[in-house]
Length: 502
Image (cartoon, rainbow, N blue to C red; front, side, top):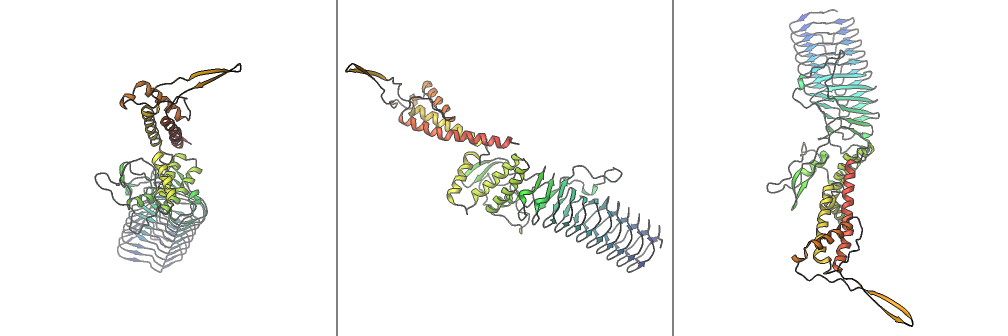
């Protein structure tokens, strides 16, 4: 049956028809609605270059041979739900104004969706692809729904859309998913083989090497954003050049084996922030979206200094995790980064883990006290500036204390004395205890005493003693400085090492 270049001005109803021979509608024009639901095509069904100006319906159609829709135009969308494609299904450079529904369709042969453009939603949920090695590039101005869709052989998927849903999708072999622009949700997807989701900075290309038109997505950011990995086994998941600023990791398994390459996490707000009665300077660090949601629920601050800058949960139904769950997430992802030799980013996740432990009220008070001290003195061994500040302050207090109370009033030389008993000479050296200074405090701050105090303090930093004569108070001051100052120096070195280690 040949309808090449035919024009159908009114409703074209081929529903339930059985085409025993080839059905050729190449370059035909359907001015009104066209119905092919429940139709059966025994041989080639060709709609190449066909124009559908009304709604086109192919629901439950059965294509027992090849189905060709190359360069077809659908002005009012298309519905091909629960259709069966036994052999090749070719939708090369199809343009669809409106939405396209393939829900529940079965593709047993190879498919060609390269260059397909859909202005609204593209629903491929619950479809099955048995022999497809390539899917796309497909350009969609709204949502591409691949939820509960299954892919049986290794496949490369290329998609550019506003949103892509892979919820409960099933990949029975390895897959590479290249994405542009979209918000991606792969929660509860199932796969036992490597799955790579990669952001593609350059536009997709067609078979001739020309760039695919992406005008439907003009003005959007190119980097894809992953929204959730809840319920998946992340042991085989690789994320490359993906924005994870809104990604929810809670509920995924084997996060310590996930691979993250070039993916960006959200950052903490910086600058002055109020925490309780304390005014603190917050440093920039990589975080998780779950920490943002938890921080945003905490009590707001007063005055001009606020806790603004933390992302709120995207919906009221989103679970806000307690610190105990946050520490587990950070620990797993930190291990994944350490296994990839990404020590600087792993250090940020260690900071997040320790922050969650510090705020976990279920932990014993002594443990929280130690963690708080570790945070206050060195930022968990990751803030060199904080440790150096404490070192400088401690050294300054030590110099001042020694100058005021530790350096004796004057240097005292030992007195040598002796006596003769039965022809034997006995010599003894007596040295009186250093005398505490008794002059006014300000008069003790002279250059000579400051120089001696500085020398004692500088040696204390490296855990050495100068042998300088000190008063009793000075001896205890030196002992304290020899205990604390090397600790602060070590914490500063540890923090610097954590940032430059590769």
